[in-house]
Amino acid sequence: MAFQVDRSPFDPDSGFEYYICFKPPVEVDGDEVRSRISIEAAVSLSENGDVADLSFLLPKVCRNDYALSYLKRDPNAACVENRVFIALPDVNGDAVFTAPATLELDQSGRIVAIEINGCIPKTSTFNPAHA
Image (tube, rainbow, N blue to C red; front, side):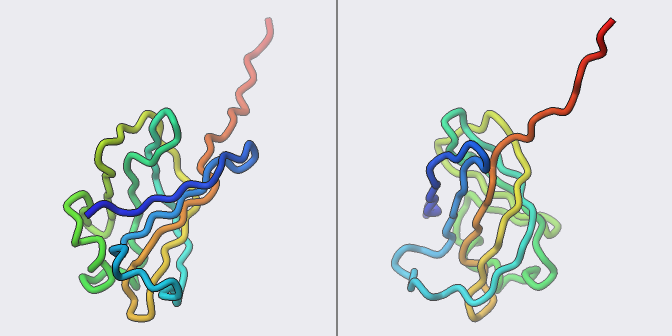
């Protein structure tokens, strides 16, 4: 089962925004999100801006098999010591960024999606010394 990935148009100020749904399409109801938890995600992007893989630390409330039930259905997702790793098939990452993200949970406490905001590299503040 592949996760559904939606990407916003590119914004020069905030970059891309991504929405990755872990719930199978036949089970998506539309109003299933009951709570949101802010986290930070590490995201690997391809040269054209597609998500290749991502990783995030699970909040304490989500550190159980039931919360991970949709993620555990997919062989491309793994949880190792409270960190989730997801590799999307057929995409190779060229750059890795950290970005603010939001986990979305259904009424039962299962993770149904992640929203990744502002995935754009920070500009360097390095100024070379002049002789």
